[in-house]
Image (cartoon, rainbow, N blue to C red; front, side):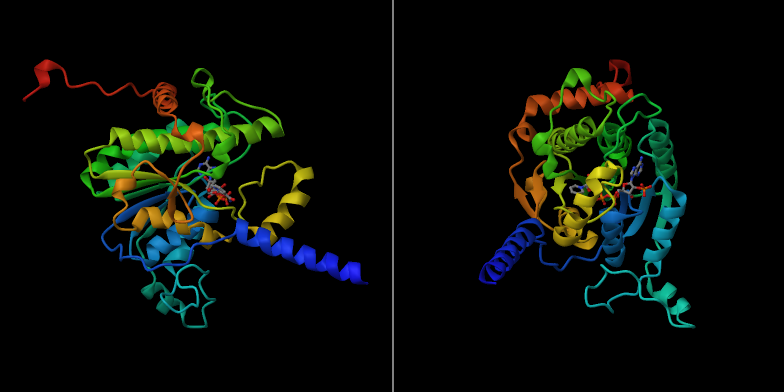
Length: 351
Ligand SMILES: NC(=O)c1ccc[n+]([C@@H]2O[C@H](COP(=O)([O-])OP(=O)(O)OC[C@H]3O[C@@H](n4cnc5c(N)ncnc54)[C@H](OP(=O)(O)O)[C@@H]3O)[C@@H](O)[C@H]2O)c1
C-alpha cells in the first residue's frame, strides 16, 4: 500500500516536472494595434499558423492566409473574420462562440473582415511564384511575413527536391526573396521564420541540399536539417538586410499539440499522441513567440537571432555557423533558380 502511494506520488512529481519543463507557455502580453499593417501567414489554415493569424487579425491587421488547401484555408479565414472581439476569458485565442439565432450578422460586423485566403503550395516553386505575383498585384503593402508552414514527411516534390526540405525551407526562401522589395517598400517590416529546437540535430551538406529521403529515420533527419536551415536563413537574411528597416527572427514555438507529425509512422503514434495531449502547449500558446517576434517593439537589434519562450536564445553551434549560413544561401539561390544579385550594368547607372 505504502509503496503504491509512493509510486503514485513519484509519478505525479515526474508529470509536474515534465509538464512545466515542456509547456512553460509565455504569459499572454499586451500587443499594439496592427491597424493598417498587412501580414502573410504561411500554413495559416491550421495549428500554430491559424492561431497566429487569429491574433494578428484580432489586433486589426489585414491578414493573408497562404495555404495549399482551398477548403481549409477558406474555412479558417471565415472563422477568423467572424471572431467576436474581447468577449472571451482568453481573448482572441479561442474559437468563435457558436452564434445564437440572429447573432450571425453581429458577429460578422464586429470581426475583422480583412482576412483572406490565397493559394500557396510550398512544395511547388511554380506555385510560390504564382502566389508572389498575385500578392504583389493585389496587395500594395507587406509589413509582416510569417514563414510558418511546415511538414515532416518523406517524398519528392515536382521540382525534384525532398518534400520536407522544400516546404520548410526552400519554398519559404524563394517566397521571401520574391517579396523582399515589397517588404522594403513597406518598412519597417519583419520576417518571422518558425524554426524548431530540432535544429540541434540538423546537419546540412551544401553539396547535397534538397536531396529526397526515404524511411522514418531519414525523414526525421530531413526535418531537423530543414529547421537548421530556418535558423541559418534568418541569420544570413539579417546580415544581408543590415542598414534596411526589414528585420527577421527565427523562432522555436515550444512543443505544440498540432498535426505536424500526421505523417509519422503508425507505430509511433500511440507514443506521440498521449505525450502531446499531456505535455504539449496548445496552438494559441505555441503562437506566442512568433507573435512576440512579429509585434514586440524594440526587437530590431536582435535581427537574425533565434527566439524561444519570447526571449532571444543561443541556437546550437551549427545554427551559429556563418560559413554554413552563406553556403546554404548560395545553394538555395541555385536550387530555386535565382542568381546572386548583381549591381546594375554601367550603362544603366545614373539613368
Ligand atoms: N508542433 C510542434 O511541436 C512544433 C515544434 C517546433 C516547431 N514547429 C513548427 O511550427 C510550424 C507550424 O507547424 P504546426 O505545428 O502548426 O503543424 P500543423 O498543424 O501540421 O500545421 C502546418 C501547416 O503547414 C501547412 N502546410 C503543409 N504543407 C504545406 C505546403 N506544401 N504548402 C503550404 N502549406 C503547407 C499545413 O497546411 P495543410 O492543412 O494544407 O496541410 C498547415 O496549415 C512548422 O514550421 C513546424 O515545423 C512545430
